Length: 386
Picture 1 (cartoon, rainbow, N blue to C red):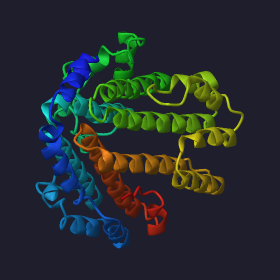
Picture 2 (tube, rainbow, N blue to C red):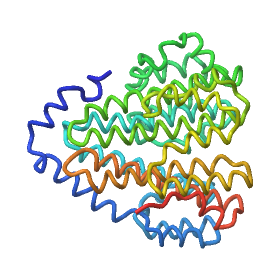
Picture 3 (cartoon, rainbow, N blue to C red):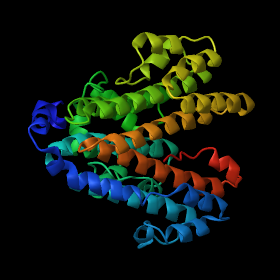
Picture 4 (cartoon, one colour):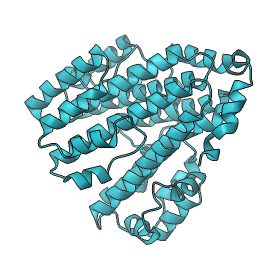
């Protein structure tokens, strides 16, 4: 696995090359691309417009212009926005991969595998919910190694064997199905989940957890062997894993899950120790979990946001307030990496994470309008940094 994502050769190569010559062009490009990210003012403008159609019109006057062309017929304005931002993000991610120096491409590919994981999880959940092929394809994000054609074949699979084989036939599937994250799950059980995701929720949850664990496994290896800037990348991966584990514990604890169930659903690669995770999983109540999870936040800004999330949670019982607090903290860390990583793949990865948050913000805005939520309520869910 380490060889697949850089390994020691990449680290040595990084030390033996002249960094300004290798990374100068790509780092300059991502810093220029950062100026094209939506500003706070533009986000506020999007919140103020009344309809999803107005969101389409507004985005059509920005860097998203070309992404609104050649849309499917008979779709809603909300779906137009969803498709446009997915296209834009996928195009940006693949462009970042093209401009990344050869010695760091494997590192960036490891980070892009998060979108392969997203797509496979989405396909499984769509089948569980009985979503159509067309609806499922609109939810795909071809920003990783899975091509649009491979995603189409996977979504269109008619049987468990077809679905399993379509995943296994891809480069992503080969790596995932041979990884440590899934070796403990028998092949027959994996096929059973693919055949009927509704049959047993626990089995589907196990497969989804294995996909998440796979991403953090390869991302951790890639960050550790990323050469220049590897520590900042590793720190970002640890932060993501910690945030995911904290939210997973909160959700499962609220749902009444036992400690053993909760621990089985966690991913590796974070900075929380096993003992700390055990304490959160065994906590008597949600307040104790929140108190332990607050240790994730190091800055005064992060701690104040977490305190505000606790206050809102007491009012409406929505765990999403904590998700926003964690996401905001990670976005700020990504911005710091982009600003401080000089002549390394760190600046590229930092921009990728910020671009993903922009996509998520636009989706939250247009979904909020579709649900009739007031702008101030949607604003609470946005992650705006910089």
